[in-house]
Image 1 (cartoon, rainbow, N blue to C red):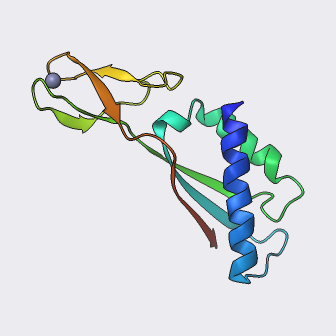
Image 2 (image 1 turned 90 degrees about the vertical axis):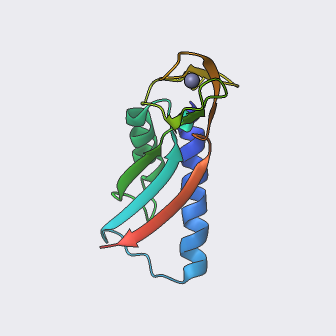
Image 3 (image 1 turned 45 degrees about the vertical axis):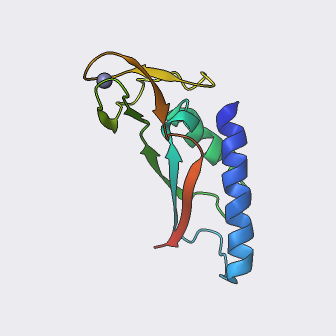
Length: 125
Ligand SMILES: [Zn+2]
């Protein structure tokens, strides 16, 4: 249920922002939520979208379009010096301290990034 907890936080943050912005929220007004989130928070994109849909039901965000931007994890290999992003699914998100094989030399390297929500943007069309 990781996705639900994540989306609950995201939606709570948006609600606070909407209130403080003084923006008038009208039901049915087309809204796009752009969420930039680390790949390790997204165990399943489908589950996240479903959680968003369920959790926004009956709120000002109902029917909002969710634009998910997933930030990849990257490696910084101490053996060969390779630095770069890893493809989705290269790292098990359930791992607390994930390691990945360096795409260049195959050494096991701790991954960087991919955690947390980087930004949440709300836009009316
Ligand atoms: Zn390497």
